[in-house]
Amino acid sequence: MLDGTFEDQETDTTAVGGIAADRLRSIIERVERLEEERKALGGDIKDIFTEAKSAGFDVKVIRQIIRIRKQEPAEVEEQETLLDIYRRALGM
Image 1 (cartoon, rainbow, N blue to C red):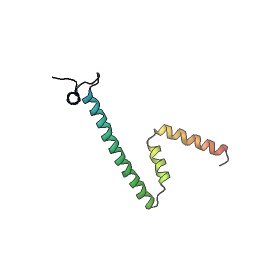
Image 2 (image 1 turned 60 degrees about the vertical axis):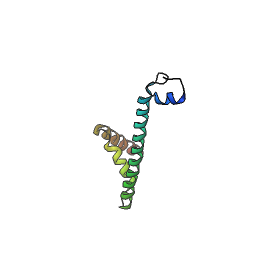
Image 3 (image 1 turned 135 degrees about the vertical axis):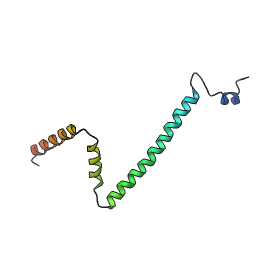
Image 4 (image 1 turned 120 degrees about the vertical axis):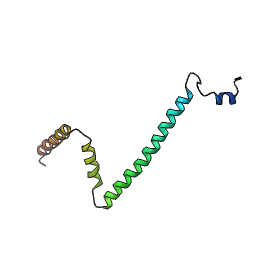
């Protein structure tokens, strides 16, 4: 029988205050796991950029190329056209 003691509340994790505690805990733990994976991947990516730099590549340009490759071809073309127009307007 539940008498409201801390021990009883700790074992009854199905619903606390109208919240499904097990489900909430599961969601939080999944997010925490993914954040750890993201942190590890960030370290791996940093290592790759360090490798690229030591091989003589310009990391800033590599990042720019990666950003461009994520865009739609029409969007890239439009940006390049505008960049060309702006350069000519400035006499560059």
